[in-house]
Image 1 (cartoon, helix red, strand yellow):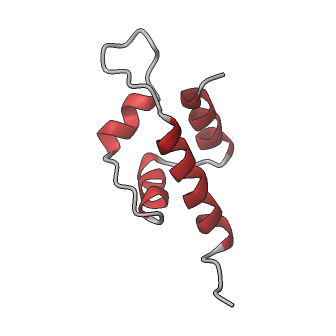
Image 2 (cartoon, one colour; image 1 turned 90 degrees about the horizontal axis):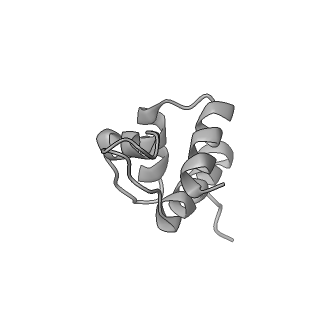
Image 3 (cartoon, one colour; image 1 turned 45 degrees about the vertical axis):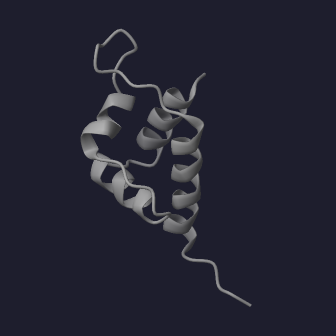
Length: 75
């Protein structure tokens, strides 16, 4: 299972739309467009397919934590 599969499965499991994923990535100051994001959800044999790198998945997961729990309080 690669990063694209993980991102797809999280999107389906959490009922996220593309614009919500873009907003989640903005929470960690990572900018991606909806068209770039759509390339991750295409089949591998599609000419517009793009591989989801570790950095994108890592930032999405960090943003998802903030989205679900809220910002971390400073002590």
